[in-house]
Length: 361
Image (cartoon, rainbow, N blue to C red; front, side, top):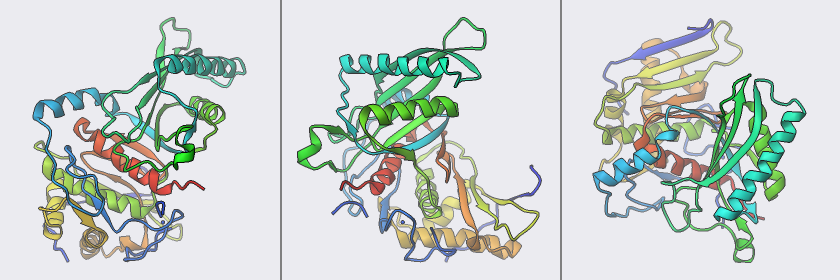
C-alpha cells in the first residue's frame, strides 16, 4: 500500500436504514447538482439480459436463451480485462459505416498517423501507419443504435518486424432511446454517444484530433461525478444477484480533503454478499427500476456502517472510484470491465450518461 493511503475491509452484517436535462454536495440529498444539469429520478438495474428500455416504467420482455447470451459474451470478450478511457462525442457529420467508406477512413487515418510519426510524436513505437475501421458485432441492440465501429492502428514496437495493435477504439451507442437528432439534420449526422480508447496518450490524441477535424465533432472525456458513481454502485450491487459465480468485493475509494495531512484516500471494501444483502433490504426485487431515494438510502447505509466502526464520515469526502465484480470505474473516465456477460449493460449505462450531457442547439 502506498504511503498516505488507508484501506478498510469489513465483513460484518450491516444495518440498513425537451432534451435531457448535474458538483455533488457532501451529503447525498434528494437535490444534488453537477456541471451537467439535473440527474434522473430513477434508473434501470443493469442485468446481463435487459428487461426494459424505459427509465420510468416496467416492461416485461422475452429473455434471451442461454446460448444467445453465451454467444454474445464471446463476441464482446475483447472488452474485458482491458483499461479503457471513456469519451463522449457530439454527432459526426457525414459519417458512413459502409465497407467502402470505412476502408477510406482507414486510409485517411493511416496517413495522419504516418505524418505524426514523422514529426516524432511517438517515442515508444515505430508506427507503420496502418489503420483499420470495421463494424463491431454484438453492440447494436435496437433499431435506433448505430452500427458500432471498431478502430485499430497497428505498428512495430522498437526494432521489431511484426505489427502489433497499438490502438484499439470503439465508437458505440447501446440501446439508445430514440433519436435525439432533429429531422432536418438527421440525414447528415450520425450520433455515437461513447468512444472507448485503449492506447498511449499520444496515439489517443492523434485519433481524437483526426475524428474531430474529419467529422466536425467535439470529443471530450466522459467524467463521472460522485453522484454518478453512487448510482453505479447501487445499480451493479443489484446486478450481482444475477451472477452465479463468486463475486469480487465491492470497493469504494474516497478522496480525503487536503486539510487532512498524512492520508490521501480511503479504500472501503465490502464483501459482495453483504452489499447485496443491504441492497435487497432497500430495493423491491420485483422491480427492474430503482429510485434516487433507494440509491441515497443504500449509500448512506454503507457510510453509516463505516462511521459506526471507525468514526470517520465518508459523506464529507468525494467518492472517486468504485469497483464491483462487473467493472471498475474512476471519475476521470477510466473503465475496466471484468464480466463479458455485462459488457452491453455497462455500455448501455455509459450511453445513457453521455446522452444526458448532449443537447442539440
